[in-house]
Image (cartoon, rainbow, N blue to C red; front, top):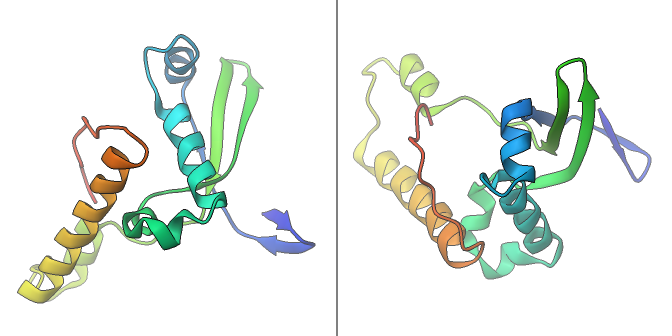
Length: 130
C-alpha cells in the first residue's frame, strides 16, 4: 500500500526488467519518459483538458530499485480491472454488444489521441489483451 495524506491506498507496481531499464537509460526505449510526461500532465490538471488521459495508466510515482539482477525502473499506478479478453470470457455470448463495442473503441481512440498529440508518443506495440 501507498500512503497519501495519511490514508492507505492500494496501488499497482510495474517493475521494468533490467534490459528495459537499460534501454530507457540509454535512450533506446522511452517508457519511463512517457510515464513521467503522463504524470506531469495529470498533476497539471490534464484530465479536464484531455479526455483520453483518463483511459491511460497515469503514474503516482516513478522510482528505481536495485535487485540481485541489476537496476530496475518502477512506477506505481492505480490498480486496473479485468482485460477485455477476461470480460468476454464472462459474457454468455462471448461478444460485446454494438453500443459497448463503440464505447470501447471511442475510449481506445481517445487514449491514443492523447498519447500522440499531448505526450507526443506513438503506440507501436501490439495491444495484446486489452
